[in-house]
Length: 324
Image (cartoon, rainbow, N blue to C red; front, top):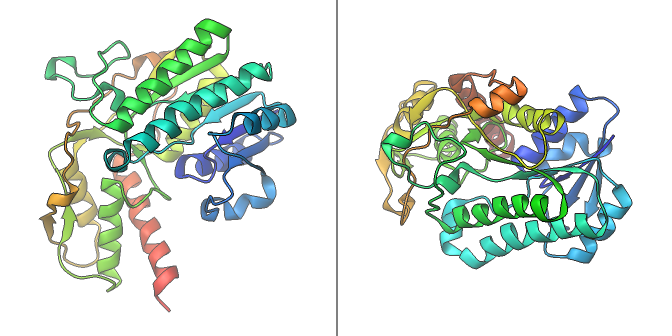
């Protein structure tokens, strides 16, 4: 079997490649990368995967890659995934996520691909839900509250449309917050962990800076997330959409408290107005019963272990970079 992962150099893409190589021997792992994509996350497996230079904005290049690889499964994970950046660069976000996805689906159509494709949407499509809509199921109204969320609505609906119009074997997921090693430092829990690690190593002083601490989330370990994605294409019928997320609910403030409790030095905190968004999504609790019923998947790694994994990742990364 051959699979293609777009975004293979990112947190989720690299963990998915690790998972497939470890748990599904004999599967050929191919990845779509841009020439400038940093490869730090996949350095240990570079000799085990086949990388193809390309760009989601280049339809002809995507057609060539699909004709060459002929993957049986495609995991479309590449995206501009940072909500705050989408406010600063909305057009680039829409271009990358919506037009990029349209190009990939068009490439599948033109190359007559029979692959199953996972379209990675986001819980952000639901926007700010009402209290009586929690837990959020797949039929909930979509109220996107950021350019990123709008781009994911477009990506999500394109996946449905190409299934309905052309029979492309799309499956869509709306993954709720997931994190772990390799998580970008622009995301709340990761920047908290990084700031704590900096203070432990004497690389920074002062309080940990934060934005809104009242938002409610569930947290899934990235290793549980990629196991869910593999199971999705193994067990679920094309055309469907599934919520995936954790079972433990927490506020961002409590999440910071857990990380502080694992710190080896005293940690104080301080709000940073620059970290507050023009509009925020403060209540994200998923109903994942549809996916669990279809696949039997459940998260295996606890929230606390997930956060400790993230903190240890930043400790090790910063120590390797700066401590001689």
